[in-house]
Image (cartoon, rainbow, N blue to C red; front, side, top):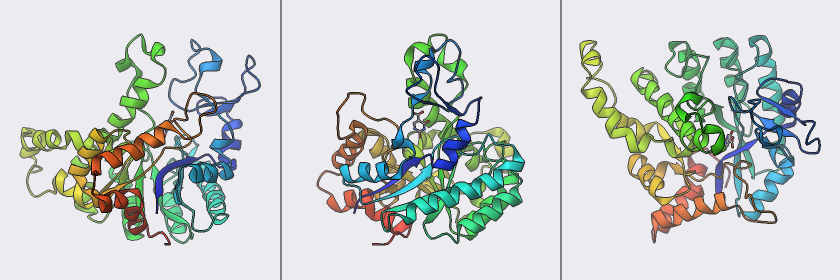
Length: 362
Ligand code: 5CU
């Protein structure tokens, strides 16, 4: 059984919401290319210096039509998918609108899953711009929906990042209801780090480097604020094989052990270290496109904690009439190269881990 745990959808309710907006994030047909709507989501993507036909990305039915998701799954031999709203979720909504929007979107997604029994499950969306008690209420509601298997979250939390103590009631509710957090980047790094020529390089720097570093920083802040010491059963699935966390874990741990400020405040001893958390609380997707990165993820967390993903509908082939997606085949190829003859471990990553961890029906 092959299960895709990293696959996004912008359900119709969310598309309508973006179409009504005029600032990022939004969907618009620009006057010089009226036939193709563009999805503008990343910070700075609608810079007036960028021609409107290069802003964001074209958005077609593959972003919102669930039948296209299932056709994509069939083409790539994927048996089941755990769909999630893509970035930037509801982070941008005024607080008084967020609770209602989350309920509508989650019900919309739950309805999409119900159309394809056994094939679709979902991570719900949280109204994170609303007060924590509204968020907790939605977590409790999601726990009762048949197809929900956790929640997708960005790195901003309630606005101050994932080391914010105001998130504790939310972490507590997620732990209590055994809802896993699928942690996904959106904001990247400040555009100044990409330099004055950044516009010449398309989306490469923010997507290849900004996204993974954002995830790495967010998780390190959770570690430093001892989230997992307070919530030892809180589980987090990290997008893009943990950003750069598996590669940098040793350095992060060493910096903690050698930090005089932390030592003075009694924070270098009696805490769970990153290696323990990587093997107990963290799951990693296998969306890294090469066996080199996948092997780092494997060494850090173990084969029983990695789960296949595609990032559909992002990264489609640029050539016309290509059927199978290079991006998906790169992830399949990385698994087969990383595991060689160890078919059992490859099967774990391809689907058995997801079935067990997310309690999917056989
Ligand atoms: O191509 C992109 O911008 C993205 C994005 O925004 N989110 C994502 O998950 N993958 C690619």
